[in-house]
Amino acid sequence: VQLVESGGGLVQPGGSLRLSCTASKFTFSDYHMRWYRQAPGKERELVALISSTGDMTHYADSVKGRFTISRDNVKNTVYLLMNSLKPEDTAVYYCNADVWGSPYWGQGTQVTVSS
Image 1 (tube, rainbow, N blue to C red):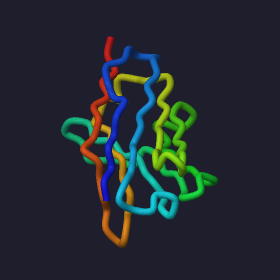
Image 2: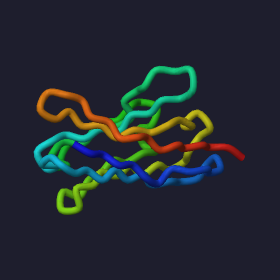
Image 3: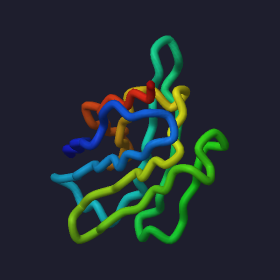
């Protein structure tokens, strides 16, 4: 299983970013996918989840209405579109899949929201 995130960076408050996570070495379309984040000194938290077919999504209350998770099962990629970013969204964002009963993580991508 391999998960590779991209798309992080520095953005001003109110701005937008789109994160991507490209998966390989497993049947991507069979599995739910998740985005987590971890801010300095805090525990890793679930941000968003999407079902294997993309017809069901779930969001943390803190990002509901601002973030959108989506997936492309042809490109084996899951996305996180983040709008109206706030300084408290600053964190390392990780892609996750539970495959064959074990959790797998990407290397993470840093998102910094600051003026």
